[in-house]
Image 1 (cartoon, rainbow, N blue to C red):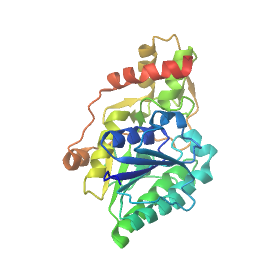
Image 2: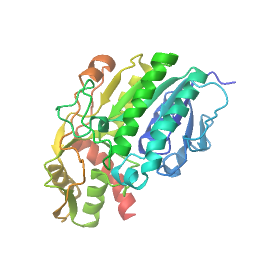
Image 3: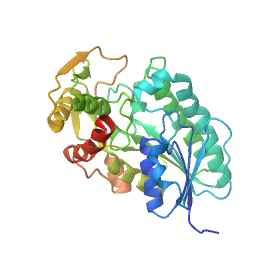
Length: 315
């Protein structure tokens, strides 16, 4: 019987989940990935099949979850996570944030496992406070198009803290800001996959609104490092993990055009409902509690990501 620690990662075949799977394997854990593959991709974890420390279970976490044996950690990363996804799958998004979180927390309680919730900067909604600190309660439209994701994650945070306070479950909450890197789906509707795909094809780059809205983009390796440190810590309150280097969407589009050497032009379309005007994390808590801050400047992260998109888009 192995004495290695065991971790369950829900949504582990997705963009972030698969990178976390690699990290925990590297750290000497046995990793079980549970994913129903509605947005996950088996190719993201294909290199791990045959590894004795890796197990894949195809399962919808909104149904009863069973994992034999001990579990030391559960990372709940199952959820549609881009506007296109949760507009196309609003009910599934709400269910995985509520029922899925409930099932995963129940399993953590039964196994005595530390539970790590993938929350999001979207809990801040269209923020009236800038940059966003963890003690800001947000400005969310509960019945808007994006409410299915925003409120699912806010509910998931509330349930996580309830299990911590009432049942004594060890819990962690990571509020993830815009992240990019290899294994993103090229058609998931987020800014970087859309811009990079359009630029590589020579198509016009579509910017919503006038492009003045801002985002803060984190390279995936930085995010994974922050999440791993949080999981290994004993800190129960939410922690922002993101890159405070803020950029307007229009400027970001221009950066992608320059990076790819594309002849693409920028075109403008109507801004979607409730699209946040600003997004920038205050990472004081991550610095203090986890001794974490991002290491990759955007220019370097984008260079690392470009080769993946060239292959994905151009073959």
